[in-house]
Image 1 (tube, rainbow over the protein chains, first blue to last red):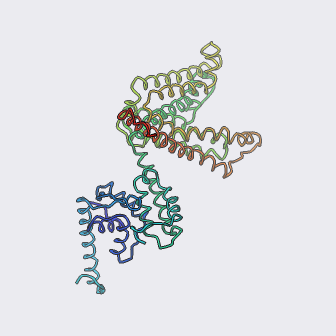
Image 2: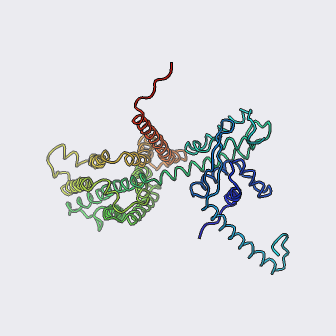
Image 3: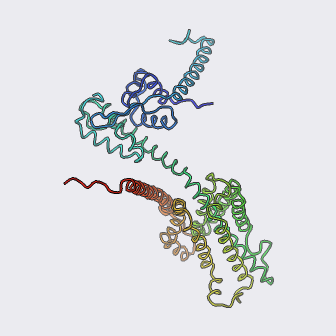
Length: 114
Length: 359
């Protein structure tokens, strides 16, 4: 059984699932995806990217030089997409179970599944 | 500010570079440029100082990266091999040390039946147990049961810890002077705990070398016991040997010399790591001999035990840890330099005649 992904890791993989992006692009995208709730700082982002690269879940798509500085674009790998899909299934299953129990107990769920 | 705009704020860039210097070189080489770009792109217009959140985040993740790198380095194969070799050599020395102590007393007791020495022949149960445990450690390593060897080692370390801590109240100097073998035992137990294939230490050292060291140790034990058995009349009439037998320290120096003779034949990465492992033990020895000699002297003249004060405890614990950390840093630098030299030689081999610079 695979370990649950931490939120920053989940959000980075989600950001890269759409298209290859550079570091700052991922930071901005994570802010958008989480509706401003999660703000990834550079230190955390590159720690996550380094680990994901080591595990083969993301890889470098291309490199370019902007203002004399190297910029890398990262993309999700097949293994990364599979890992993200597993996590989505796990979260959905947990969320479904939680909302069903809350409904049974008579608690209203705002924006929850019907 | 976006990632594509020119960045004129050199103050901010310099300060971020200073923070990024906290990361290990391996991390900087791969990500420094990118991280700097992302940090500057994320900055507010006109911002001159790094945001406090970024400062904390960069320092924290840099320290984590350094710790992670250290753990990875300690996990490399050379460390596994060095731990196996160091574990065996240290266990041999500790076995000689502890067996020598009880064997000499027992031999003296057997040679002097006119005195009563009790059921333990002049030694105490702890001494016998301690000696037995280190012999079991050596035996388990040689036979090829590394986990069993580590378990016996830890039991011996805990036993010694209990004995030393219980004796501190009455004989603090004796306890403090016995700390370096205790630290050697601790490092030995840690080294034996590092996973390694069965009989790895024997295959690295070679059977002949292990037999030679073992033979030297057995000879020393027999010599010590023989001398103790005959008493001061002397088993051996030669003055130099008689002097050697009269003092255990020269004998232990011979034992250490037999161990050191094994070191030059070891592969360099294992040799360097073994020295790093030995560092804390040597540090404790010198802290006690040099840093606490005044304290030991005053203890002998006060008529009552004088205990170590917190600053002395800090020195006793801190210096070995710093020595180990310094050893790791020096090892890393040395191997990095060797890697670069090898890389340079490789390039020279492929391009022996570089074009001369244009004038």
